[in-house]
Length: 212
Ligand SMILES: [Zn+2]
Ligand SMILES: [Zn+2]
Image (cartoon, rainbow, N blue to C red; front, top):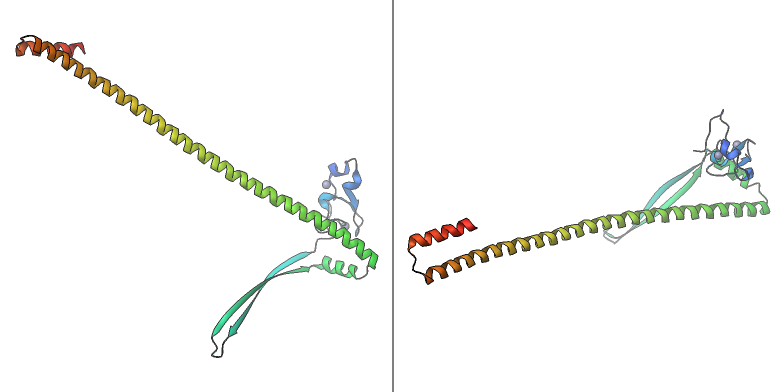
């Protein structure tokens, strides 16, 4: 809001202290008060915020539907047209319109160029802001997909680790089985080579159990 209170000085201290003061403060074309960019009218910087404030853009959308009917009265085609209607209102706009009618051709050309330059600068600024907005949006999306990828990689890593651990466990189990089989084999060879009775075999088995 560029509008300011009646008892307020429409100029910031920092703006007034700028070395190139002309760029930051000026006199209002209408009331003559000295104001800075922060108190300038949003619509026309040649005036302070209190002098050009009553201005509005009213936007309306008009929809027109055209229908074609055949002899029996049945609708055979329908066409919808949508138009955006901008209307400028407010006493400041009326004042401006009245002023325009008093301009000479030269003054009008100069004013058109002045406003064209303002318009181009406004459009460039709007475009730059849009580009910046979409760049930020794109970065957010990229960051999200990077996080997603990181989480997925982590899951895969965990899976590989789990798989490795499983294999190690299987190897240990295999070795245990192998040792058991070897023990049985050596026991059998001892038993078959000698004439041992069942009590002696039981003693050997108990021995083996104790050694384990
Ligand atoms: Zn200021
Ligand atoms: Zn003013």
